[in-house]
Length: 144
Image 1 (cartoon, helix red, strand yellow):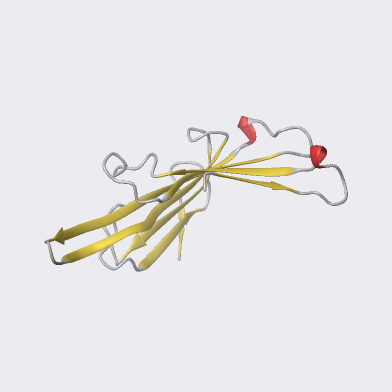
Image 2: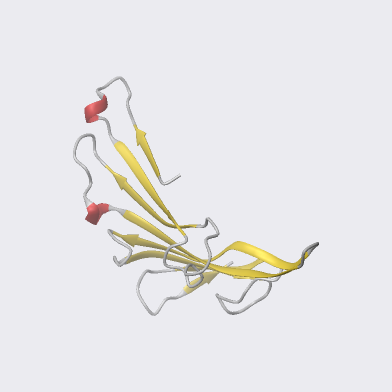
């Protein structure tokens, strides 16, 4: 799915109904995206209208998700072995307006006891999650 539109009509006119439009991009802005497409949603652009006028690009809410992957697979003509974990996100960034807009929220994810965000997962078990307590650098994180 690349786009989803929701109309909130409650007895009124469709032309003036509040709407929400969500546009999805997959495997963009990723370090692996030059050679692989895993189908991971990496940019989600949400725009709302107030029932007639579009919120405008500056009012979009953008969520950028970064992934760390482990696709270390060995194959032969009769078998395949190795690790194939390609859906482990290591960061969610909520931005205002565009993918280069001001940061509004940041969450980081760590897997399998790793202390590096981009360390390839070995099992894919989430072992730590950090949420920035403010959107201003340097970030202070709440750990769970």
